Length: 270
Image (cartoon, one colour):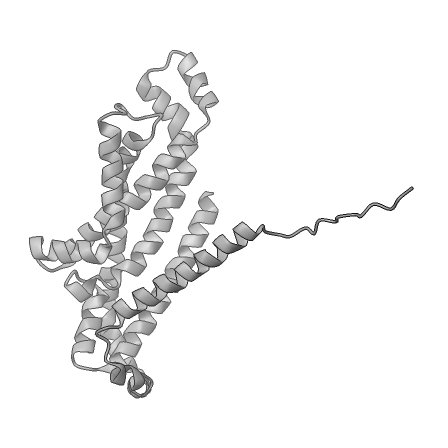
């Protein structure tokens, strides 16, 4: 019996073609990064970049110690900020509920007309930052708390509407069919078949959005929409860095507290 040569095939994780494509993709990604970096830094003054650590250390030294005596003046602006977030969230939720029902496939009155309109409203709201909304509203209705409240509300429509219409579409169809089988009207099916299923998600989404709006409302004053951001802008304009420290610490404490309250409320609801 003659010995036959045995050809053993060596297994590899990727084929030569796959390895070539992988390396080509990495080279293309590096080339894209270099090209974007050149575009972004073409007007950069590198002398200022080199002196940035020195400037940061200088400003950091001026921010210490904090001007704690400035704290009482921030209580009213902080309360305004909380009101902007709260009222804006309520307004956004009220406007987002009908939009969500029109956007959901299983509740929309018209899949060809109203649903695309509702989806467009959701996308438009989510694509424009609250700071831009505030900037536009300050130019339209003037500076003040109202501009901030409306800006937060318009920004909240997209967030609440998107998550809520997804929750509506994920409702259990068997419960809805059971209610409809009793001869209930469309409004009764909505009230007893859909709404009870989405209420935990509704409250969770609303509280979560309020928590986000607390953070966003702290900077709306930079464009004149009221709140503690006005004090921050005023302190930055006069280079009162010790006051800036107090404002930043107060904003941090407020955000941490709102995060805790939001988590406790979501836990109690869900």
